Image (cartoon, rainbow, N blue to C red):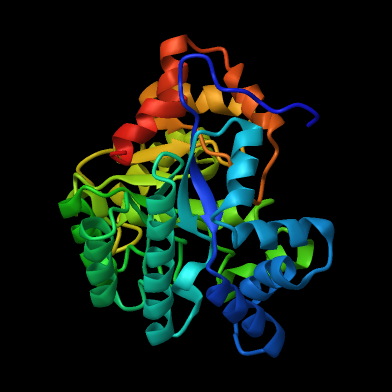
Length: 349
């Protein structure tokens, strides 16, 4: 990019999936990645690269992740981004042992709240939690919402191979529903039981493994009846729904047939179709997917009022992609909803 991108005509650009990491957690990650102190091949493959590689890309991402001040604001200005909704980068505190995870989630929330206080028109924040201790996670959700003024809950998909459809995690959903906080389900690398075929082909991260793992997580939550238990729970997913909007017809057809056949004792009938939950309980962001055909398709099958803008900073900092989404073939009113008012409504900004 050679020229700075100016303000948008008639709307603010709010980027809704923008990552950071406190330096203290960054150091813990580096130690885990280099000392052999963690049995998580996905973490070693992905964060080990970003935090220890000498490549230009890895250095840029690692440095930008730790900045909640002038460099980040300058990047936002250059790309015409009015506000970022900040969230702790994947895998967050979820890769750590429980006591350390609780402490690091709390530290991350204090740091993001401080950044919001310093730049209230430029930043909002989401709450990091340690799902491996659900009771402490609920306490941190309540603190983040009521004392720190944070606007959502970031969960980086599975927690050491465990998924949120397990009822032991449902107090987290209960707290989110009660406090009207959206839960952002962000990708993680596939867990140890799933990752080997991806690693063998170099497909474990954002190129494909993220989508497979997080799409699976979304479907586990839906098919195990989480939204029948918590009908007012709202979730947000990035990357245009990890390809699930393309699968709506087949998901409904095959889920209905599986339930009717009683193939699995644990798969019970739901109150609605799978596609209904994907349309009514989820919102979708364009993080990492600034491609008009995919965006407009998702808007057409999920709903114009369910798809909003995200950049995926700093992992995908390409300012020209902002202009590509400015040029989407939708009305001015829909463009304002896409970039601004939907995020304001969902996150109660």
